Amino acid sequence: MDMSRRTVLSTAAAAGLTAAAAGTARASASPSSSRGRKPVKELFGRLADGTKVHRWSLENGTTRLKVLDYGGIVQSLEIPDRHGRYTNVSLGFDNVADYVAGSPYFGATIGRYGNRIAKGRFTLDGRTYQLSVNDGENTLHGGANGFDKRVWDVEPFTRGADVGLHMYYTSVDGEEGFPGTLKVQVTYTLNRHGEWRVDYLATTDRATVVNLTNHTYFNLAGEGSGSVYDHELTLAASRYTPTDAGLIPTGELARVAGTPFDFRRAKTIGRDLREGHPQQVTAKGYDHNWVLDKGITREPEHVATLRDPSSGRFLKIATDQPGLQFYSGNFLDGTLVGTSGRTYRQGDALALETQHFPDSPNRPSFPSTVLRPGQTYRTTTIHSFGAGR
Ligand code: BGC
Image (tube, rainbow, N blue to C red):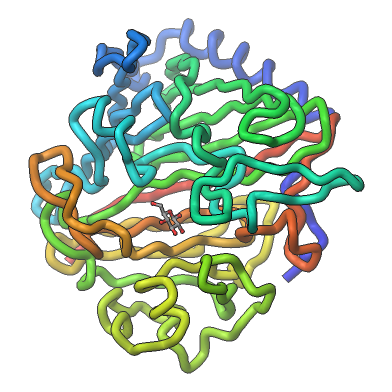
């Protein structure tokens, strides 16, 4: 794969940040018979300081998505099974307090840096930055108060048959220790086929590092229905990044061939989960970054398929990113009670996080996550749902 390419485009695209928003306003003003239904807003709850948290409901094709302005969280994602029966296939809570009290990033928008940065520290242009440390000695998912715990400005749109939300957040210089004021726009779009598209844009006024992703926990049989060990997963990746005991990549790109990490052909999550491979013992299951064979691409390409044989539901993921963190819900321990009142236990869901590799700011051999003034961070991931036999 081409390790030297970056996920950034130049200044011309930076202007697109505002142009896109303006275009949206125009599109939603023009009537059309095949227009998507306008997203609906309701009060979901309040933070301890009284700040209102809203929930937006979007529907298109056969997908129903509920999104909080707190953390850009996917609070519910309903899709039909092979008989047309809808269920919520994403883990979450039915109230704000539980999200605040200790959500393991259910459905959240992750930033400024998805996954771990070793010792919460990195050096850029000769200067060392100390970040907020929230996972042992490391920084996980942007630090103690990452983008998942911020209230985003949300602007709904309809654009022809598409419906969606633009979500805006400005992360100030020094927030959680990161340099530069980062202006972020995350757009969720549902098209009429029910595909959920996530577009990320960001610009900075000082050199920084960026790695944004979404942390939806999927269980295609329905949240709270038990484990995902029977789900079949395919990952278009011949290598993965082994980690040390703190789940920090060692720097090696190891071959999956002949190991439990080989998902190049559809395989159930449970099949090789108890193989005793040292990497699985360290992570308590799968919690690794797969190095996608396609590398960084200009357009999103299909990289993963998840299928639940019991319901027939499937999810296909396409991305332009170079990596994908497959996390098999190892730290769910029966202490959280989810949306439908059922307890979440180990392996009750999995996350497939499209991203740059963990700890890239300290690994010059990994694709770069540096963003500089004048550049635009731009990346897209598309989730396509369906149901078959
Ligand atoms: C990480 C896990 C972590 C989880 C948090 C995943 O992205 O890889 O190690 O425990 O997020 O819920």
